Length: 530
Image (cartoon, rainbow, N blue to C red; front, side):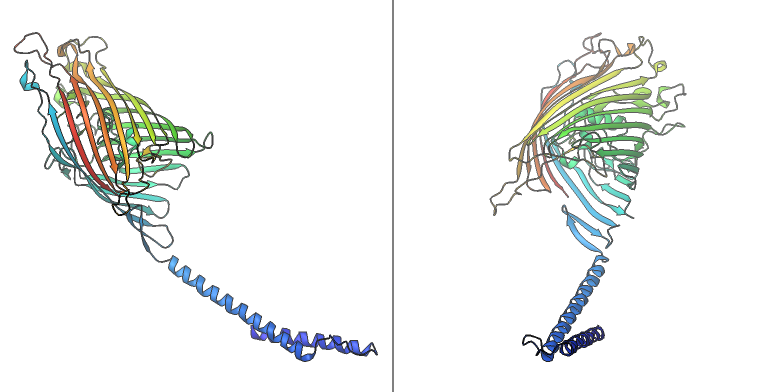
């Protein structure tokens, strides 16, 4: 570079000298007094050389900084993205985040007196505590176009995990392997999900267990998940399409379809010589309007239990599959089901549901209706009336919340898990801190649910009646979000069960006794999640 500078300077001197000589040769007038001298020209050349050298030094420094940045870019980095310890490769094509979720529940059951006609039928639920969920897992991106997730659950319904063998330990238990899936994301607006999955299904099913308004989902959502293959820990494959702005700028469409088997780590649903329990299910949801904060969403879900796991050809009812629609009173500390159809011999069944939800700033309102139908084996239920071999059941709920501190619920446009098209919990604008005189976010919640598991209830069991019972639950709650990770929930459930026994009373022959009961349930949850 210095050689080039000297060459240019020399050329400039020669040109200037030639011009000066020509001026003297062509004119007899004396040299102007303002014409630069040789010394001044030399000074200008020196200044030009210095400027060129400074530019060269600047370019060299930029090259050094760029090389340093490139080297750092290729190094693996650690971060805490949304409280999740995350490791990322330098090119961003590989990530791994560590996930933790812990929920400790306590419940106290304030029950009515035992039924005077049939004391043994009145269920006595036990007060106590349970580790509802104890998740630990990893998730992340691989080769840029793939997503993976693996999650174990050390907690469970009614205490304890079912373990790898499916045998409950310390209670009813949930499968140990909660999630184990791989998703392909390389096709725009499409996701293919394979492994142990939790499909996109039902209105509350699109809400993370960490973001539930109440301690548990509504009964009809739980029944649908358990009976039609939509809960977590399901072996299966899922296809999800999502596109924002498909009809107008603020809308969002999510369409999902899945084929699932039974829960992992369990032999239930495998008939003796028959097929594995299998279901097809799907959901469509559409955000019709949004201003960036408030949202209006409509949805529908449907499922078909193709096979309940039995052979369907045996001569005894014990060798065929069955369906059992049942649930606890929206809390999991005690495993007692106050409403249940019992195991009904059925090869298959189907269901459908409609839902709507909206948030207007810090107010939220949502609801859902569902209908369930069994395709029953009539050869094992004598004297069934025409049409009674397809008993149907229904349920609905409406719920709402008001965030007192002004935060709003979010809406998940797209997600790698089952939360696409669902609402999220509010994020505290001012996390709890005594030093900062801030108290986090506070939310008041309410829900009314009605689940009717009776079919032909005016008939006896021998004529095809199913006395599953009707359960009505009114729940009010208070949620305290201390920060993004910690939440405390307090709720009170007013429960009323109207249910007749399947068998006539020994004290009153010919009369099916009332075995329903009323109770009040106080529940508390402490949660940490990242």
